Every structure is written in structure tokens, then in C-alpha cells.
Length: 465
Image (cartoon, rainbow, N blue to C red):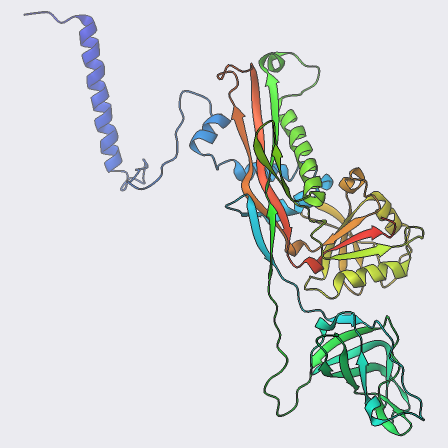
């Protein structure tokens, strides 16, 4: 008989042991249900985790086999990198972004019907010698006739009404009832509810001067009324472009291996790059101009996103040559919180000059700034008034963009971030590609911001801007 060599015997033995081990594993797998599930069984249609053995777990492997694993951690880490410098980007990341399937974002914006108007020309009450029953009505000229319809009631601020005798002035404001409306001229025909008795004619409309505010109140229908003036509000389609933000970090192999006097590695460079990238995005999200331009070198179109500064529907102008006082603050808060669908808590970010004006003001019972609070990872000062609360924060971006005397009040509930490509990092193998002997990382995000209810947001600018 032919003799079997020792090497062949070893090979046969190893093969036999391997088969035995495989049999034991299969047997244990079959018994796993009764023995407390010692092994996980992957069924068809189910996704199993990736097991890595014999090599270290790296970000490259994670990006290859589980690309979404680090996404939330990346975003969570971003919000911790110098958040006070980028409040708009910080708040939007805490709120979360809506997924956009395109680089072009179409959104609808809608505002409530106006609730007030201002008289543009005066109405003068008649003399006793010339009064007639027609003076129980008056034709008023508001600056915004869309605020009023037939059967609306109006409160005139700055004009007192009269008691039932028509001669004693009341503590209540003058109330008017809308009888008719001239669509072409925008003038409104009203009758007095608590008017003045002039020459024996009751309920005459008293004098109303230009600049006085007309505040729309509830409608008043008669018993036989079935219909009323129609009310329609339609959303207006707006559009913004997502902008591709990128940042690349590189470190040579020799730089990585070199001895350093202080600890400074690739992650430190990454943190600095993220901060620089966020700072640039903050400026764009605020003051960017929506446009598409053509790059003649790259022979491609470049999408630029529009900033929320230009999307705000209101603007408050203050006297740049005078210090702020209590009246200025109240006027600002009044315009900010009234006549829109916004909340009673909003955010004010401003440059250093405007923040300085606020700090130099005296504190009154009706408007105080003693409280501080932390929200969205940011430290705010609270500015409180009877109209609402403002969370105030200095923004260095306003200073950098030459707007240190300006500010923006926005309602955080109605600010929306859209993301076509969420913030992500990608390792580039430049060594393998034969380009450079470096470690390279590219940070990318394609996104934009939009404001809903434009009149819930307001720019603050000096009158000489």
C-alpha cells in the first residue's frame, strides 16, 4: 500500500476538525431558541449588521456599510461648536430640517387679513348750524381698505366715544360700524355707535385726525342676515435655491507623524473647519441673495440661496441720531407683535451698536431685561413687554456684515430649514488616487432657509440706512 505523508495527514485532520466544528455550530444554531438564543439567525428579507474582524473599525468602513450611522452624531457635534456665533444655524439644527427633493425649494406663504389701518386724511365734525342727519355717517380714508368690510366694527384709537346722552365723553374709545365700502377709491362709509350729539342730531361722527389708528373688531350682523362679506386668503408661492456649502481639510502623512509641541491633530482641524463653514453659512442664511450664476471656468451653474433678512415682511426704523428710550422700545415691540399671526415669544439677534442702545436704556416695569435663559444651546437675555417677550442675542455676523446698528426679530416657529443634502463628511483617498500623500476630509451640505408668515418677522434699521 502507498504510504500517506505526514503533511497529507495534517491536512485531512484539519479538514475533519473544520467539518466537526461546523456541525457543532449548526447544531447549536438549531437549539438557540430553546437555550436562550445563543446565536442570531438572519432570515431572508431581514438586514443583518456588519461584523468586522481582523482589522480596526474606521470611518471609511462605517461610511461603506452604514452611511447613516454617524449622521445624527455629526449634527449633534456641530451644534456644540461655538453655537453663540451662529444663532440662526444653531436654532435651525435644533428644530431639524425638512427634506427637499430638489435644489429649488417652492413653499407657500400666507398672512392673516390686516387688522388695522391708519387714517390718511382728516374727517372734521360739522358745526351745530350746519349739522344734518347725514353726519351720523362719515366717509373715511384708511391707508389699507383691505382691513375692513361691510358689517365690521372699528375702534378708533385716540378718539373717545360718548355716553348715551351724547354730550358726556366716555372712557371708552369711539366705535364705528361699517355701512359701505367704495372698492375703487378704498374709502369706507361708517356710522357711529357711541357718537356725539351735535345740534340735536344724535350719534354724529366726531373729528378724526390723520395718523389715528382704526382697529378692526368683530362683525355685527342683523337678525335677517344670511350672508356677509366674503373672506378669502390665498397662500402665495415663494421660491428659494439650496446652496451647496463645502469645506475640505487635508493633512499630510509626514505632518501626522511629526512630533508636536502641543496636541493638534486632524480632529482639531475638522472642528476649526466646521466653525468656519458654519460662520459662512450663517452670513448667507441671513443676507444671501437668491440667484443662479454661471461659472465660466467650471462651465456649470451655481445656485445661491436667499437670506431671511430680505424675506421678513416688516421693518422698524429708528432715529439714528437719538438714544433709545422707553417709547422707542414700546413702539418696536408693538409693531413686532401686532397685526400678524406670530407667537408672543420671538428672537431678536442684532449687531453690537443696537445691543448697546438696548443696554443703555432704563428698565421700566412695563419693559424689563433682567432675566436670562438658555434655549437651543444659546444664552439669551429676556426682554419683556405687555406685547410679548423677546429673546435677545448679540450676533457677530451683523458686525462682520457692516450692520452693527441693525437687528432682526424672527419667530422661531415659522423659520424653516430645507436640506437637499444633509450635513455629511466624506473621506477622500488622495493617496490611492495618486494625487497627494494626505488625509483629506470634505464637509458638504446643500440647504436653504425660508420664512413663513412674513409679517411675523421684522427688520430693525436706522433711518439713515
